[in-house]
Length: 73
Image (cartoon, rainbow, N blue to C red; front, side, top):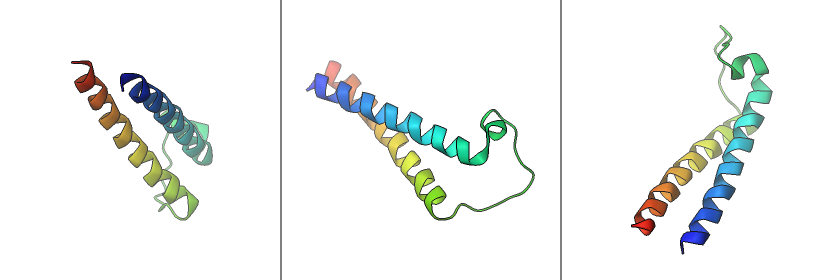
């Protein structure tokens, strides 16, 4: 069981990293490292979907990490 959780956690981590990098590319590299534009804009379409999937993946990563700790005990 623990091996499967580790594999799932690695896959989720890679997907989370990929989603984060793809989002930063659409916003520009300057914004990725802390520079922010002064113009407020809303997320629409694919950008909004990627944002929501990133949140879901982050929650999944956290839950799987907790399960990993509980199974280890």
